[in-house]
Length: 231
Image 1 (tube, rainbow, N blue to C red):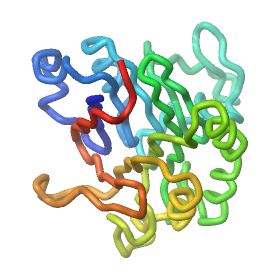
Image 2: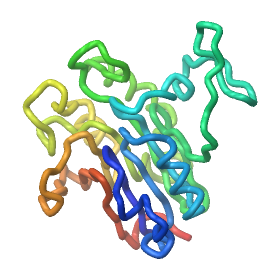
Image 3: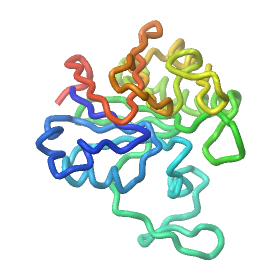
């Protein structure tokens, strides 16, 4: 399986008329957040491949629509709670934040836990305890996957990194220990994250924690794993 992974900043090699020529071979697109929905819309319209995403801590214009406590949607958009109708861009991606999706075509199980560590009063920021309980909400489905599919999860998609792995020392970019617990318990093959920008795009993006490969997919990154999923 070939996966185009994106996060944090748009890539001029993707946001171009040559997108299909460069990346038409990928099977799936995965975003770790902080990108505008219009970027996803462009990618989907050109590549016509499934796209899975979480929100980060920026580009949150449409966050309310996707969260479980969002106001009721209708065919035109959604109410912002103040009597104003917000119109949504045409979009076909799958939001996986706080849930798990099974991509039957590729036999791929993807779960997501977006957002960052709380560092101010901004949206989609969580304490360690809050992120832990968000993870616990996924546990019933994870055990269902184990029974039905023989494994808990293939890819955990996050925005922030795990604590002590690819993270930083400031409050905003500190990782979550919850993600270490998730890998201990449910052993996904990959944990894909963004959030920590890479000044040098040739810098190491990879780490391994027990049975899980951890990759910072800042801007763009290709995963080519013939043992992951199927056609």
